View 1: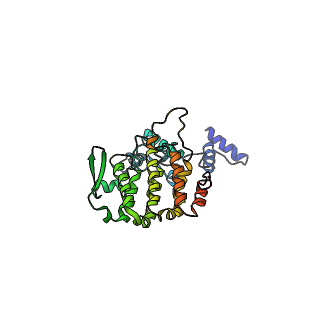
View 2: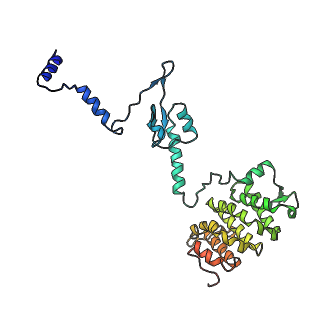
View 3: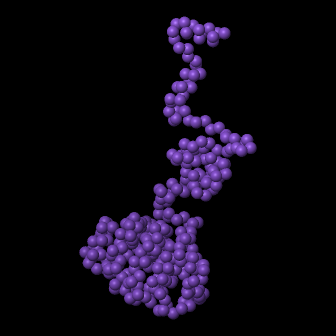
Length: 311
């Protein structure tokens, strides 16, 4: 009765009646979506059962669809994707661990980017060939140490196939892969001669991958192999000059990584694992055997390097 009286009074004064719920609904329609986020309501399935919401990444087209929930952080392609496909929330511990690994990868872990517990060369082509038994090598256990033996005459090997393959194994940090790869590279370089020059472009990527592992042992071994590679033939040094832009950035990054032991004695000098000194020696070898254009290209990539001819 009160509502009827209010309407009649409004008509009497010539004004249009207004209802509170109608005005509220109109104002809600004209407000932005960000101010009025849609409320998640479970949809009913075929048999009347509630449909679970889907968890979608933020700032995606799926976030504007119905029956979706935006989660904090990316949805990865493994456990999180399968969990969201089943309608369950991803494991927060898994997402936190993935985000931590991504941030660690982006920021870098300093000098030892490959911790001791990880295997830096688990995806190398050398490991695949070794596990399949396609390499013509075998291990000989001698009293002076382990040594590899070749089942085929090393002079008859195809260097365009086996030399890049063994160089790819330089990134290995696990026995027996690293033992076979390093001794195999040494034997091939000693017996290669003029066959090495034609394979130089195929060796750049394996060398770059080995230096990019940031593992102290792997990097020092790779630097020694580069020195042996340059001195294996007179044609190798000038052939490496066009590829300095791929190899020398890691030299520049770790050139100052010298061991500062103060007044103590470094008993590991015989192992020659001082990375800064090895980089200086390798740069000098590259300059001495690289020809006229070697120094200017080294100086462009490593500005702090000083010529060994002038000093």
